Amino acid sequence: MKEEFHAHFLKRRPEIKKRLNEFKKIKDSNHIKYFEEMTFYVFAANSSAKMGLLAVDLLRTVLHKGSLEDYKSAVFKKVRFYNKRAEYLYFNKEKIKELGNDLKLLIKKETDFHKRRLLLRDNFKGFGLKESSHFLRNVGYSNYCILDKHILNMMNDLGVLKNNKPPKNENEYYLIEKKIKKFAEENNYDVDELDLALWSFKTGKIIK
Image 1 (cartoon, rainbow, N blue to C red):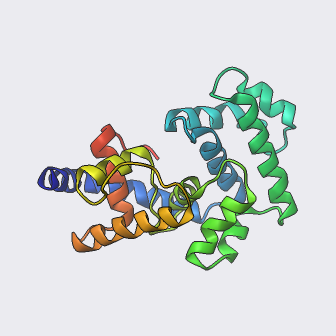
Image 2 (image 1 turned 30 degrees about the vertical axis):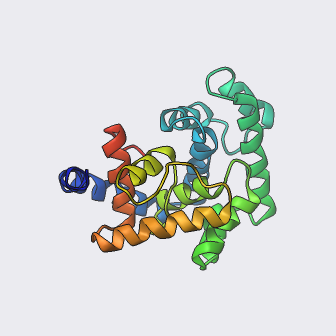
């Protein structure tokens, strides 16, 4: 299994590096792009990347100046849990205003690795540690582990974890993350590259 995965990693690495470079470019974009990325995670959580991308497209024209009703109307019966997720997103938009009206700057100002992730989890709806890690990775911040089902399954298959159960709390999340980072270090994998390689090994795709 390890040999098969390593061969996959080497084969897909150029594509993975290209994708990560695209994420790093987002880091230097404006707060509008950051909020579009946040929209993706609100709608993709416990659903799919495809659903998150669809929601961004549906909401794009009302995303920055729309009301809660505009949000609900845009996604009505087109995405999973459309009303609740529209409410989450609208709450997040208003929370950003409360915190200074610039999501990019808010994240940039927090220089501590763990506190940056907790800032998202503790202030915005729809964001646990997994979603916060995913968001940060995809706006150009490095070394966060995204513990979705595909990653946990692969880590279990590779013998890094004893099971594929998702973490029940913050401490379990950090413990699993530590084990994945140790595996990456021992096998000379970059953590961010490893995540996309594990995900693509399971799904065949490199999306977000």
